[in-house]
Image 1 (spheres, helix red, strand yellow):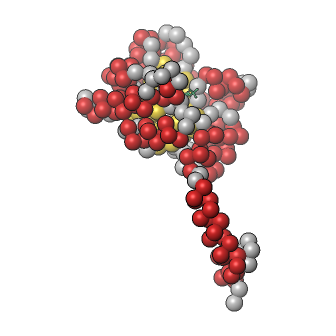
Image 2 (image 1 turned 120 degrees about the vertical axis):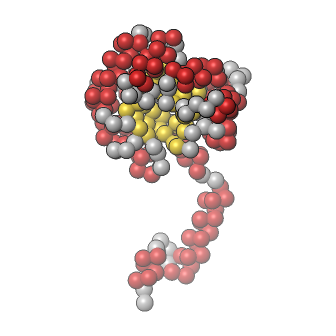
Image 3 (image 1 turned 180 degrees about the horizontal axis):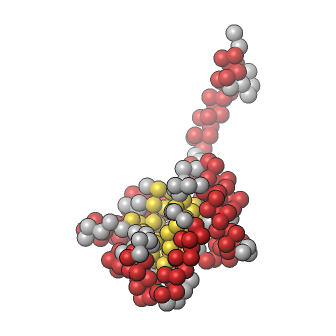
Length: 229
Ligand code: E4P
């Protein structure tokens, strides 16, 4: 399973890409608007920060397929390889996905909350489908269940479309979609720490450091210990 960062905050993106094994960035119009910056500068800075070989998913805003295709072409000219147009699952969006796939784009169908939306998007030619887990859970839905059903349907019908599960607020949701068959998750920066941290890990490491310091000196590394005859 691949991990993406769901953010347009360049500081958070730089910090996260320094440490975590991330395959790319997803953004949405709300995340971009929150930065209050000229779009071109912001997108180019993100593209530079995440480096070559990573994916960058940016949502299209046109309400008609023809405009969405033009938006995607302009963004591809700007951002180059690794750019993926995100297209909401509306009737015009499905048309745009079909046209974009025909032009060699690998579109991501977004704002998905049901298996039938995901199936239609896959049939239209989406490379990724983005089901929104927490938004479903918040209205007594079953976000993980929807992801599992999409995974089952894609396998049943032999569809190559990947599941890029989105909208998370808890580690449990992320673990749930991983076991349900998501190929990719996109996470807000503040969810990365909780995915890794565990009190037993922290106390275990603290114990190792204390034992080591008792023998080789506080703060000493392997390098210091090897340098001492
Ligand atoms: C998906 O691509 C969206 O950017 C996102 O994950 C939505 O998350 P939210 O429900 O936390 O806004």
